[in-house]
Length: 165
Image (cartoon, rainbow, N blue to C red; front, side, top):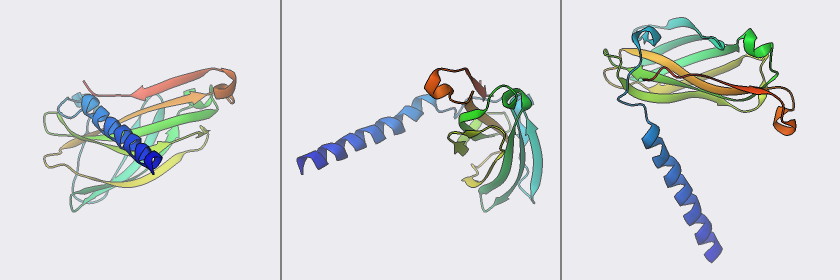
């Protein structure tokens, strides 16, 4: 019985540390440059294509009862696919900003573990739309590797887009 209590206490401590850890790195209140913003349209279904040096995101979204509902497909760029085989991990967020570019919220859109870069990643999610949101921006981070690099010390690369200043 005592070991169960210790385990529960340890899990609670880890949970609290993890939860509080995000407070120090929260981008809320920081800004996104105007050239990184996508205007937010809250009426009807919207479609778009967002591209960076690493990937392209084809997406459609709509706002329904203060929820931003997005469906998207990520295609990794040839510079990654031509040099690496495995996607070790990938995570993408959406940032909602006000009319001055100040970040109101940051929400995770998708995360993936090990997979092959040649395959597009699709997702669909609904996140709360904060009051006063006028635009959005995307942020991501990932790591690509050669086949077996995690076991054999092969080459890899980190890639990211972090439009927050």
